[in-house]
Length: 119
Image (cartoon, rainbow, N blue to C red; front, side, top):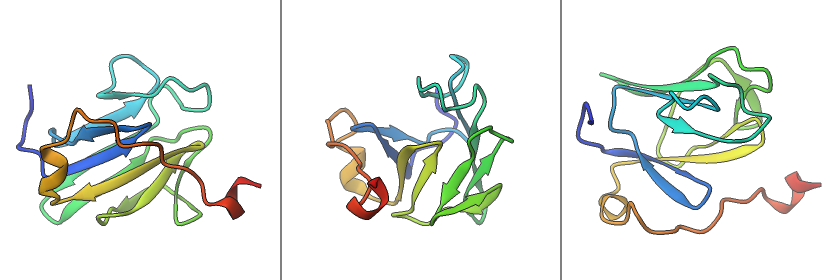
């Protein structure tokens, strides 16, 4: 059951995930809202908090870190279009995009590292 009507989404591993709670928990544990089965992701890796002044990405002292703009962060306000990484998993944050709401169950293709970052 959702807490809020989603206006923000995460695009991860070819899927669109609606941020429909005031706090969205991300990690390997099944109890998380968004479960990522990758050995480099911590059991409780990060959270996204919806607050009056926007959405905030918060690292939960994960082993491999949370990165935005090639910087390891502990807490950072998200802007639509931001691409952040949990370990080596790319995730895009999108806000206020009506197209996404109608396409939640469609495959988006993969997010991939730019060629210069792959090497």
